[in-house]
Image (cartoon, rainbow, N blue to C red; front, side, top):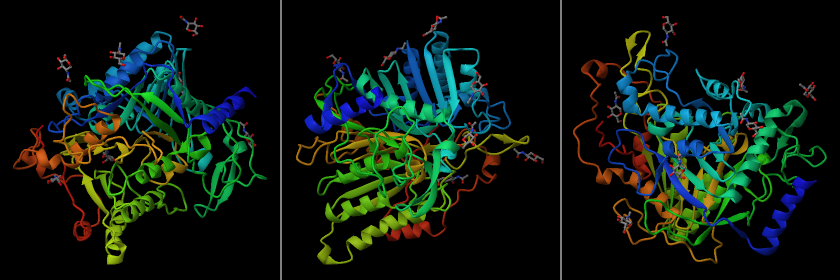
Length: 572
Ligand SMILES: *[C@@H]1O[C@H](CO)[C@@H](O)[C@H](O)[C@H]1NC(C)=O
Ligand SMILES: *[C@@H]1O[C@H](CO)[C@@H](O)[C@H](O)[C@H]1NC(C)=O
Ligand SMILES: *[C@@H]1O[C@H](CO)[C@@H](O)[C@H](O)[C@H]1NC(C)=O
Ligand SMILES: *[C@@H]1O[C@H](CO)[C@@H](O)[C@H](O)[C@H]1NC(C)=O
Ligand SMILES: *[C@@H]1O[C@H](CO)[C@@H](O)[C@H](O)[C@H]1NC(C)=O
Ligand SMILES: *[C@@H]1O[C@H](CO)[C@@H](O)[C@H](O)[C@H]1NC(C)=O
Ligand SMILES: *[C@@H]1O[C@H](CO)[C@@H](O)[C@H](O)[C@H]1NC(C)=O
């Protein structure tokens, strides 16, 4: 079959010749894209980093032939008039201040692309309350060039959702990152992604993944799923019948357009030499951009949807953590950190990332700094898993014979206003909230060591790697023998790049991370948390409860961690 031949050729060319593959198009550029919540004016984007809203609009507006978009849900248009909406009751002026127009502009750009007869494919999970799939359905309605489909991964895995956030335009331009197709993801939630322009080779691979998801949406899951006794996670669970978790006698041939048959294994095979792209990188906003090619690879989740020589997304995180040099630093930004499954029942224990962290703390004497979001929908249990990770510090210093000088440092990232989110009015009564629901959170998922960076879409919870679609991009990926990319050892916010310096992607993402980590270092002192619309009356209304352990602060301090309100220099 033609399709599997192509896969085979890629396989051979990467394993027999070079571990990397040069982009033939010299124009391939990789830009970092971020969303920064409003009212965080002392946390500007690092120069050269684009805004997610601009990137989404450009992807739609520059699209001439085809556009593929995956989304968990769609809420590009705000509905402050809908009592069921999380933005109910905010005034027009409030919505403008929140930046809601950024979302409607993206929606308009998509509508225009649809009207230009661009072939558009929209793949979504069920969506979320109260909009569900209204927006993709409206875009598809009456337009033969727009196709929309709902993929329920829960039917394939017992639980799980489409969580990938990917845009592919004209088979050349790609966005991969944490931003949802939600106006709030553009201006009220902190997001990080990568925008690749003029990169047909990479786009083609991301499209294969998209095609696999698309195909899955049209298959009868009952005919293609099996219950496996999963040895790695010690549970019985539902998986696609071509899963590597199944014994070869029980497994089926994958019906997906592109796949590689791999014999049954207890877990997932680790690729020591995943398929590499070598792309020269240009950085907008800087006159001197790095043009020397850098190796990178794509990773995907869940593993049954991966194909060819692509790394499973979990392994890409582990690789990035383990890429740290001796005495080096790994910097992680995540919304969640949970060492177990969140949705799969029975709950499974998952220590893959904690294990990698503890390993580099011990043997590489690495410092691992983790920023975890603390917000209105903080997952109960996170606190305890973080404490358990911090216990690595106690173990490290438990014997002088360990000669262990690595450490774990954790900070909760609180975006100002996180505890006052939700509709402005409920049943005619003012709630005291000052921001819409599900906002004011650091949602970016990325890691950067002194050798490598990884930007992904998966939350750091078991389900996102095994039952939920996600993807990521890791780069530069160096063999231990290769020279490491120079990343400033002090990646501090005041360590800005001089105009003559050539920023690399790792620099930019490192600087962005540091700005958040060190935010308190350069915030101006302020008396108290305040907001113009926060009247005395509002203050007497209790905020939505944030669940946490009452003893957590003390415990954290005991293990040497800090509770920090970043960006507390908050001035709307
Ligand atoms: C197309 O994309 C480029 C950046 O890749 C951007 O500068 C340009 O404004 C976009 N064009 C439109 C019409 O949005
Ligand atoms: C839209 O594109 C399709 C194929 O790409 C073509 O067959 C069709 O004629 C086009 N329609 C219009 C109105 O241009
Ligand atoms: C796709 O859009 C159509 C309207 O064109 C709508 O009737 C249908 O429910 C949508 N399907 C999905 C799966 O969202
Ligand atoms: C799906 O597959 C199951 C099991 O093979 C079968 O019983 C059912 O009829 C199929 N449903 C459809 C819509 O084809
Ligand atoms: C780039 O070079 C131009 C012309 O030399 C200069 O005006 C501009 O300020 C430079 N920009 C940056 C970001 O260094
Ligand atoms: C919200 O959280 C901040 C930071 O913890 C705190 O200073 C403030 O008092 C809280 N506001 C309310 C209304 O609880
Ligand atoms: C509004 O009040 C009704 C009746 O008291 C209650 O059933 C409903 O849940 C309330 N709605 C909200 C959004 O609180």
